[in-house]
Image (cartoon, rainbow, N blue to C red):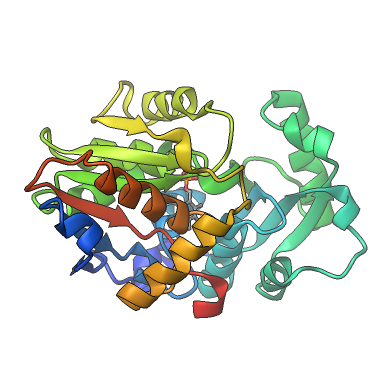
Length: 311
Ligand SMILES: *Cc1c(COP(=O)(O)O)cnc(C)c1O
């Protein structure tokens, strides 16, 4: 395999991703403009921030097998598996939860398998410890062996959970650059925080980012600082987190969030992904309603993904 074969740009991404203004009186009433940054339209199989996070990693992998980690519904696992199929490199997915082994695969994992990803299920206690070097080494060796590979660094390129490492963060800088001049405030949903870490670094000095964590716990700030340190050697950009909109935690929802998302779809004719995008839009809309943005502010909402039903 030649390194060129792992150039994601050969898949003709829609970049820069489209940016369009949305008329919404909850913003307009306060003299605020709402813009939708449609990263979900970058590529049908590798949508949103997953494209931006994988691009430099796949170039670095240069044809080796790519081994990565995720939960049973991970968009990152799906995107990695799809890239493997489209560009012709082997993929191995280490999945949280050994109770899933031997059961029928859910639709998300079935897609991964159909795209050729070898799936290896790991008990939750071990999975949680995977940042420890010995645990990671053992997991990589085992999973690689189950895919018939030796698992050495020459053979397997390891991408952390959610795809967030220094290269992923650097890949998200372009998102910030695409939004320069376009907005004063940018909103983005956060899982691991890799996207907000890179986005903040790509914006201009007068712009700021608000990240909306979808996990409960308030622990994300330290992770974002560590990712920026790994990617740039220093803090970068103006970012804050608003922890009020996780709605109970990952994949949790509330009747208010569901009603908000359904209404947003009606108003704007755009499918709203519920795990991340709905919480970010709900957060930005609440902030606008609270008068948090001065009149004249342009707010860009990064649409990081689409619901499965829309793909
Ligand atoms: C993965 C994902 C995110 C979170 O990205 P992080 O870089 O992990 O913070 C946000 N939105 C969607 C739709 C995702 O799939």
